[in-house]
Image (cartoon, rainbow, N blue to C red; front, side, top):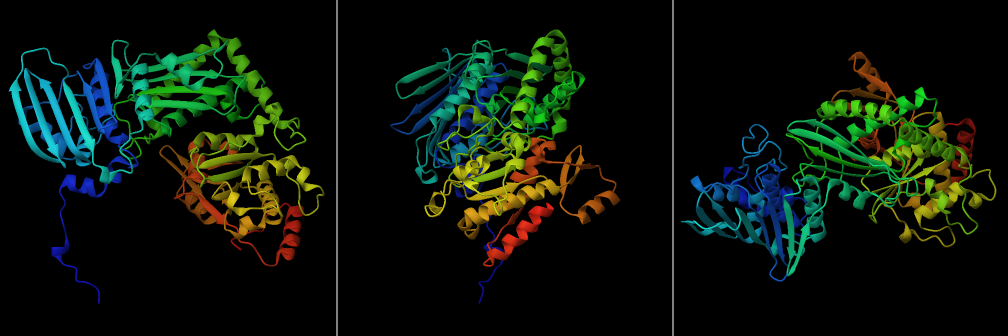
Length: 597
């Protein structure tokens, strides 16, 4: 019999109690307490960004696992138990979107930070010097144990100090990610005025961060600084701004390197602000290229691109409390993009030789991609020049390998992917052989690339435990040519590496020919019924000839994001000989005839 369920079973948790029961909901990753340090650091940096603090310090004691964040800004108001409220009550603060009297630009938005720090710490202290008073509030297990407020007439040592010891039952380790904190302070030091000092003290080692935006860009994104032409653009719409530092590297990897920050917060996973700028950049170069009769594909302008975007915005929106990705609508950046485009046009008129050199480089890159000069050497390893078709790998052992046709689609996926879990292998569709008819199949360059990327080896030395990815996903254009290539790749895997399909690791990505593409909506149309419905509703429908025509954000929706993409799992048939005949016929007719069986 089921247990009874009455009103007595309904509990109302205290706010801090809920945080302690569900820590990951408030701080994301609970592997170590670095996010607690960041929550306190956000507040200190916001004081500096508002122009009130000149010193920001993070102190890490690895022996006692005690962490402190100090600033010399205005200090948390002492009256009306404000320090207790911001340490105990969720959604308390001075930086909400609807009213920002104390802060115009800030990264703290949700009124969660200090409450989460207190809630997940065994001891927590907030100490304040303000208005001639010294106040100190001590908490144990998130509960206030003692406090005192006294007059203070000497020079104050700081304005606000948050000191805490994380509770070990909430974290796998109490050793914080110091590299991450160093990155935060480096970014802040680079983007704030030179008279602001950012300090990190780890045990007895003190580090002061002093650098400029340009220095940060060069040290982080650039391999060869000699003869580098760095360009700087800024859309200054006070109090907001969108600043761009960019360059192209010719003698380094062609994979774009993009870093960005929003209100002094490094945003590692990118977002809509990056996509908005990249769309503008692509349109700028394509427009210039057509006028001057250069031939290249839109995404070729990302080859060798080094980019640093610095956004200061009143109303940034992030994916989750950890703020790793910007989720504002792309239209929120229209005002910045309009100004930046004007500046790019003016720059091209002032420095036409530089822009022409860019266009020449893009065209030369495209010629290389269309040629057959990139070869494997006799041992099966790639020459240095073959980096143009190299695998763009991921870091996770349980990632996904996207097998795509050509560098245009591959380039967009590389930009939009999460490098932790998404690997990309561009293959030349016209060079993929028909395994059912071609002899000496293993001498083919594309087959060599694919087998090497997968990592299992070939029978009789095949080892499924060495498979380097959790999923192999074939993603091609949604036309007959794309279906033909998907058929060729599927037969390669089925005949050379059948155990991969037997293990349920091989998929074909369904890609749409049409999508609703409106100001605030991109909705793929996966079948004729959806297309007809959209037409009847008179929606704005766009046809995509191929994946290369989609921008990175659109590809994310169609291929990368699990809730919205469509993957067809390919199952192995016991009657493989009949399937070979069927696929051979499909290949000859340039049709794909695979489904979930």
